Length: 372
Image 1 (cartoon, rainbow, N blue to C red):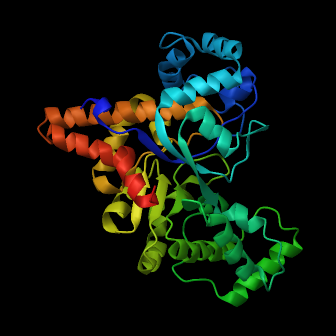
Image 2: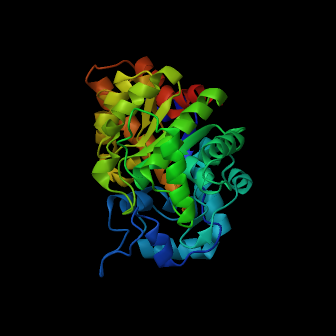
């Protein structure tokens, strides 16, 4: 399949990028999900993601493919952050970006506002509202907290394309199928408020928020995105297995709210099964496409073993660095192209089938799901 025959990409889950100049260590630090420094004597560039950055990004800055990291960083400094950002985002060739606004800084620097990200990328940019961030900002007493959170989320999500939860980070994905009792929610809210608010991690409040999101999304006809799989060290990996959501998925199914399982890896096969088993569940490969480097086609193939073609979506989950937009897009195009070429060579699909599948995953599934 010639990728030129497929539509431009709709990045259905990403974040904004750093506007400021970064020193070499800070920039390299964003080439990992970890918020810790690398081990002494090692480099973030010595990774599958580092290889992918050196494969896809140097030509956008006027350097040869696989330019050494030191030369790449020097050229980036020479161009300056605004120009490097513009070139890298333009090279990604994204049509639309759906941006989670729950993160506002990276490497100690502010991220570009959505309007400036749109200008730099040339893409249509829409907002995805972070559920827990909205809840933490609600100024209400314990008795009023459940109602106030619902009203605040409805207001924040009006005009957005989706709501996103990071329940996986806060407590894990083993959400009960039953809604928490109001008395338990009020009591937990009182304890949280009395303790100075801070980071919301109480399981009763988190599960109440999840059901609040279902109610708001049903009313506004929006999907609910959920982080699953790997992330930074704040996460306990086996608590982020998407199969832990099975009871909640069944309980929320009558609402009709689409549940979009982000990333998934190394549980991407579980996410694919959920998408196959439940009509309301969708999934994506996300930042896994970047982090798995040369293995991207294999991992995509593992997802497509079970995931219906109309329920797998493209995203970069790019955060902080414009490089991650370009790498995510290039890895996805390359990986899917290689996978479909193998399928065609094996007689598994026709050229028309390959083009149809590529259009679905690259853009059409997201346009249908998010009504964009």
